[in-house]
Image 1 (cartoon, helix red, strand yellow):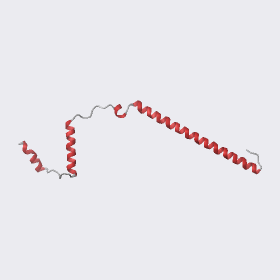
Image 2: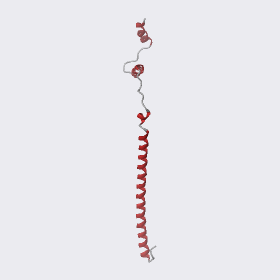
Image 3: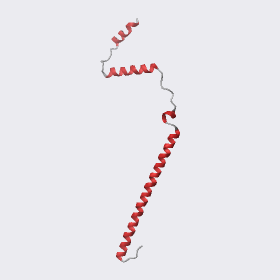
Image 4: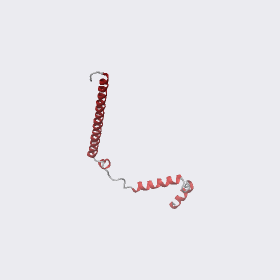
Length: 106
């Protein structure tokens, strides 16, 4: 009868050695089947809960964009300041050179 079925299956398909890779995979598969069989499934999750609300993402993107623009403005201001300092120094050097050569400053 029905009590003999596991014995017959054991004879036809022997179990893998305990601790082997195949045994671990069978155990994992059996556990997964049990969980799937048990059911329950996953609860309903709204995409806004999972990924966060759209407003939060938009606000973050705007903050990042503002930060980048401020950083770019600061870098450009610093570059402009360095350029002006270099040009002033160059002008002074050229005026000194012209003076030593006896030429009028430009």
